[in-house]
Image (cartoon, rainbow, N blue to C red; front, side, top):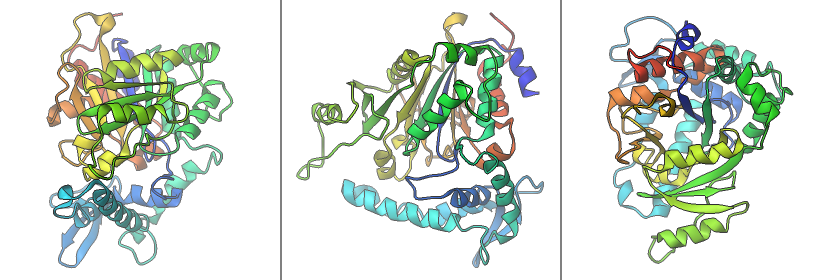
Length: 390
């Protein structure tokens, strides 16, 4: 049904922001989590339970129908139990980093053991096994099948797109290598459709870069495929824009550094990706998000044009897929911004039009997952205007 819907939509240029860890690959080297750990945490996000004085007790499993009033998933329960310590934002940058590392490590440790013997989710181990069946079918590949089905669908529909891999992690190089194998037909999942055929024929290695953020100061460094490395002065703990740019220029592979802003970033990323046929890899700046205790104001900046472009051939559609998106909540990984004004968007009705809170378990077991989610956001962005204008 989703594909039938998309076939009727105008082929407006689609800007895809795609997270990597736990969204399209199920390992997290930066977080020290194995595939087994991640699969357990995926199930923990899909089992609903009741909280009492004795802790959390499972009530509904993945996909199970029932009244969820008063229930929370196990990962929500753990996030609430181990959260930002009081007074953390008043501490130094180094102290904030240390505190949040401790909180994050505790959460990961507990969720990674969810279905193991003696744990609250031991009765749901079959859902870990279900994921493992899919993921081990191609043992030499990281990216889940539903991602390739998503890209193949766009290609078959001749839908123009920009694909921005956005990550806080360290797997960008591996993901881009697998993407190249896919485009070149050297992957288990073969490319389909005219868009991918053109990418293969005119292949250009994907450009990469990193973003550095300090409050409202935003910098884009072209070249690196690793996170920005910046050292703050010990005496003041603050860094001037010129000092930040100087340090970024010293990063290996850096070819250019620009100070940007919330309004300009979207156009800069799309233009940069155009140098390699609309595909790029961007490493966002995790330390700032951690210092903000994983609040959206420190997350991956995502500017969108909320006022539709009157000229159809210039109009764009947008989507950001990430497993750490929390619609309508402060604790979220995406900092949604108005591309015209640069202002933060804190409106649940607007968020659901542009962002997808990826459910990793469903993305693994349902090959149409990303196609279905894309159809939902495009329908919201186009409203009643989903009729071909090309």
